[in-house]
Image 1 (cartoon, one colour):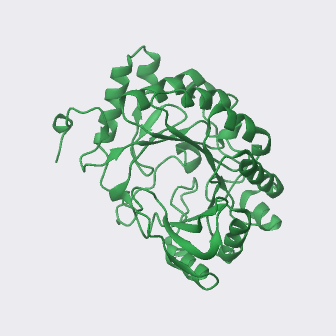
Image 2: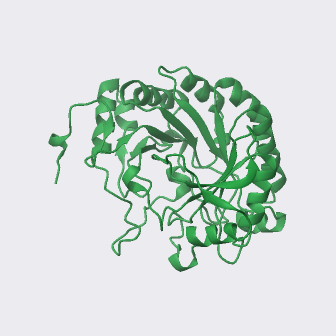
Length: 345
């Protein structure tokens, strides 16, 4: 097995399998104003203590290291719910001023986006992904334990009107709850010029109650869609994108391009071999995989006065140890101790 001593002397975030991480997911908070059942229990979770969460300046410092020294070209801000972070606009503005400028996106539940879309766009945010699992108000309340569907829809519209495009929708189908809504969600997305992505439910719930037999698979989702829409495989090169995409014949997006729908089959169609992601938690831990069972601490050396090059070298070492795949389909798979809300999507 390759050892840290075998790591090539290059600045990028390379791992032992030749993958290079250029896409950074930054969690800004573990807090959320929804309680989606696949992410958080109805009563919520103990939040990270405030002193352990990176400050705005610390987040920007690590972003500067990632972009300036490690070759990161794309930054996605996540949570929890990142719109709850008071310094979000300030962080976006600082990130947009980095050289070379990274592409900047945000994954959100959309609540409050109507108020923040303009300031975020002015600060330099390029686009948003909004989570939306159902168009039915009662079903939304059943899934998220909050009656906030109108706020999400208003946030989506504000994002599009402000130019945070392409606006992408992330949807998770749960068996027996919203598993019949694939067609309705796609019709909604097509009507508004949004790009829809279905995501297989992953074993990242805090209750550790994920059951493969209850997961709605990529094949099932596609079967639903193909029963209602003329789909054909997207000829564009997928690259490291997590979503497989299909063109929806007869429809165009907001820019007049052929409309697309995607499926992220993390469990049944894993794409680990092309993964280009690295992750930073709200409390300053590097995760080299969404499903990693260990983390590498950057917060402590950062606060102890480490120079940028030391932080960069620690980050490189963390990524060198990345496994070839997430291992969900292996009998020995262990779900991460942290749930999705604490890791960052």
